[in-house]
Structure formats: C-alpha cells, structure tokens
Image (cartoon, rainbow, N blue to C red; front, side, top):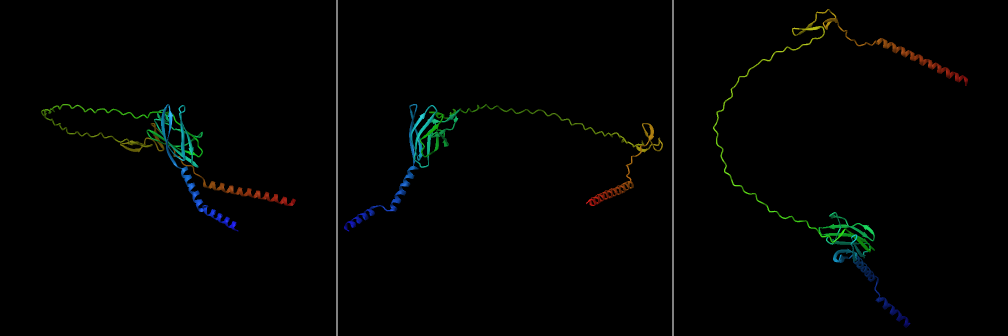
Length: 290
C-alpha cells in the first residue's frame, strides 16, 4: 500500500510539471509567426563581382530571397546570380545595375534585358534613370540560378555636350544724319476742264418684224387675207396650191362594239351548253355500264 501511494505521488508531481495544452498552442503559434516573418524578411544587401580586374558592387533588395554569389560572363555578356529563395511560395528580387557597370544597348538606344530563371525566360518590371536600371524579378520557391543578359560591360555614361555660350554682339550705332526739309515748289495754276454740253441723239426707229400665217400677207404692218389665190388655195413658192386638210382623230363605232360583245356572249353560252350535254351523256353511259 505504501509503495502504491509513493508511485501515485511521483506521477502527480510529474504531471504538474508538464506544460498544459494552452501553453503548447501558444508556443506553436509563436513559432509559426516567427517562421513566416523570417521567410518574408526583406534583405537589403550588396554583392561584389569582378569584371576585367575591376570590382563592382551590386545593390539588391530581397524579399524571401538572398544572393549568395555573382559571376560575370564577358562573352554573352551575362550576370549569373546564385540565389537562395527562403519564401514558401514566391520571393522577390530587386536588383539595381549602374549603367557604367552593366547595360543593354542597341544602336545607341536602350534595349531590353533578358532574364532567365533556371533555364526559363521570365517577365520582370524595370525602372530606368539616366544612370541606373533597376529590375524587379519574381522567383518561385526552389530557384537556384538567375541570369541577366545585357549587351555591354563597363560602358561610360555619356553626358550631353554643353554648347559654349556665344557672346551677343550689339549692333553698331550709326551716326544720326540731319534730316533735310523738302523745298517748297511753286504752285502751278490748275486749269479747270471745259464743260461740254451733252448731245442727245434719238435712236433709229425700227419697225417690228411681223410674220403672217399661211393664207395671209403683211400689208402696212398688218396681216390680211391673201386674195391673190382663190378659196381653198394658198400661195406657196409663188404658186396657188390647195390647203392641206386637217387631220381628224379616228372615231370608234359604239354600236359595232356592242354588237361584237353580244355575239361573244351568245357563243360562250352555246359552247358551255354543248360541253354540259357531252358531260351528261358520258356520265349516263357510265351508269348504264354499271
């Protein structure tokens, strides 16, 4: 009995020393928050690379990303970055490249960089100034290599030439010349024009030309009957000829039309009656056969 009581006492003391469930839950949540914050921590650092014996510093900012080393390939030319993506999903690398160190040019103008992430071309965001080009690249978890392909290493930034100031020459002042007043010429008497009285001329009176119709002649400005030819004749080309008879419109005979209409109706009735008789005979013959 004493042994059992001692064992129970020891076990109860061990249980009291163990942390409760709430304490364990708080600890686990705190560890998760620390892990998330550490994975998304923003690193602002500088890495160095040597090109033709000259060392250059490259500034970058990594969100869940750190750059472990940088190499320069002068043949392409390319910057090869070894990275460590600590973010769970996607890390962000923002790298600043001075134009005097590394640039991408084509025929003197800015050209695009090419970014290859683990052998795949990716899109990126670029911001440019006269001396700096900054690339923002998204890197998925597990990325190891980032290649930035440009066109030239160590290109000096060309500043626009300043034109020398040319002195402004003031125009020479000419000496003032005295103004000579014009001499007054003697006035010549003005001759007044002679007024010629207007002459009125009457326009010639022209008699209106009057044309007369056939069978009439012009006499004292009036068309009168030509009595040189007899009745029913007119003077034509100096000879009396018969007057042409007026054309009359053909008249339609109403009685003839009415007669033709009646005959047509009678013929229609006769034909209809004959057809009816023939049809009746045919139907009667068919019934007698049945």
